[in-house]
Image 1 (cartoon, rainbow, N blue to C red):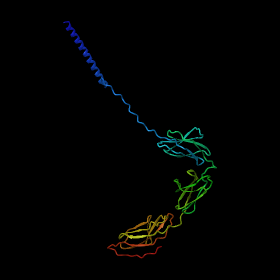
Image 2 (cartoon, helix red, strand yellow):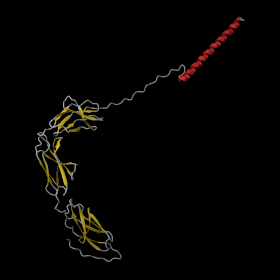
Image 3 (cartoon, helix red, strand yellow):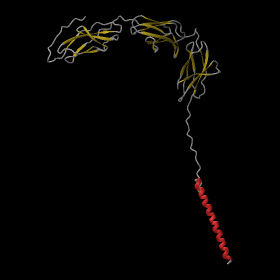
Image 4 (cartoon, rainbow, N blue to C red):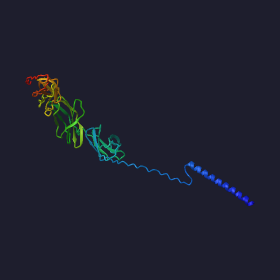
Length: 348
């Protein structure tokens, strides 16, 4: 009896312990669901993605830096640009080799030269160049020219000698130079100069030929030494005179009747005088039209009728050549027309 009661008591105790354990397991499982992890499961360690390696830019210090004075107020700079990925080049200037430095020029990408103007006469300037974050170049210096050492040409004069030639002359000794370069632009007030010639250092004259009559031309000259160029002279201008020489007589005139009312004219384009600005067309010695080209069409003619033509050339100055040899052609037959032949007139 006593043993049976103890057994029942132990059984109830074990049951209660078991229920308690089950309750703890359920609570732990619920907590695991809420936190996103499970019992007896070890979370894998989080891996940080490797950073993308950026290839460093190869930036090289501009070198060697050179400075060359070309006038009383300008110094030209040049260097070797060894950078393959340059986003900016900066030029700094100082009156002392030790500074203080002032940034004076920002030049385009991959540039290898620049000019610094607006400087004082006979004054020494120091320069250095930097590309991006590269170290500075070596320091280069130059002294602007004085009035006694300026290599710019002296007074430039331009004189028109006829309708197609202008003579240039300048004075002053430019010193130790290779020669002079001559530039020209066409038209009153023009500014689009282009180089037309270079002459020796000993020269002080130049003849510009094959120009257009009644046209304004402007010139400027500057000295150079190897690849260095010095300041320009002052601009000089002149107007070519009116031409009195007429263009050549047109050659190879041909008349071709293409219908009962039309004749086509043409002449030798390869033999055209370059001075010709256009052509007058004559029918039986009377002017019937003008053209800038080397062909002309005559319409509204009578059928089965002979027509004779000549042409002459004229230039911009109003000079005209003699009339060409006369050529004739007969329009094609019209059933309702009778042939009509006119006498060939003498050329006037």
